[in-house]
Image (spheres, rainbow over the protein chains, first blue to last red):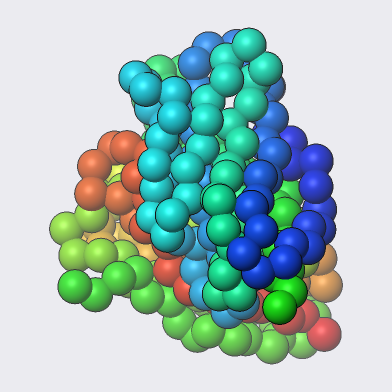
Length: 118
Length: 113
């Protein structure tokens, strides 16, 4: 069965510092990969996605992620963090073609809670 | 344009009560998903609709959970005889096609006391 692992439960970074959030997946075929952000009381907002092609993908709010097939990873990065980036970050994976009734439901990791200090 | 909306935003129920949670997807979106997010966890898939047809309900945790989307637009998730373990945020997402690009609503936080 497919699974998504986010090894870091909590991360604290200083404002202006760089960030890398880790995501590892377990799936036999090439997955569809996503990063979402969730601010308190808000729904999930899509930061970026990888379907195919260039393994370095750019997203909103200055985020990027790199798909590394050999490491089964899809780590999220940002060069300079802002206080407004404090939120919960979720990596998600989707599988295609297995079952037309699956409707492309997403399988989420448990999330990484990010704190940005002044 | 308007995004996915959910109501109520917060619901407190006594154990054993029935609750109904509503989702208004983005107009014209074909696919609709319900997810359950327990405290400190990621969202977990509950059920999926393509228009009015419920094509996958494999994630519903028990037969106390029931979802419908009778006209292929608004959806309701109903939980009968609520239990404390049902306490969670219930997220609804919609998509314009049969695709992974899902747009999430703000969720309904259900607390069962």
